[in-house]
Length: 163
Image (cartoon, rainbow, N blue to C red; front, side, top):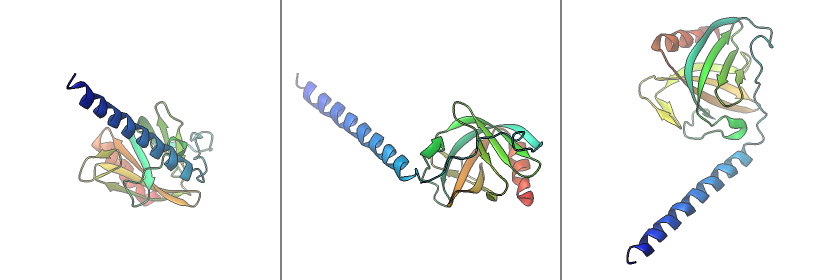
């Protein structure tokens, strides 16, 4: 009986913290609802032939540009997923995310292709993440991808000359 009260207090604190986390996530989603839904059409629907891919990857998440801990949760962009990446002949990137809507980054929205040691949800060090900097509506975003093979990472990074 002496241990029951402290255990119940710890459980209560834990449940309270989880509730606050859920409220914070919902508040962030509401504050980001001004963002338009991203395009989800595949390359063929856009009239583009595939130039590279598909490559196996992990879609890490999408964050505000140059703010690697400010995750975008609107439209499912903040959820990590196994992915397949394709690049079209005109520079459009199509990311099929397992269990989530696909994400298409048109070449016209793509600002930069670079690398990063990490962002919210994944830190790998060095230049382990491939980062697409792109514009969704009036917001500049960074989308992180962790490619399964280093050769694929290097090949897609070399596409920045075509961006």
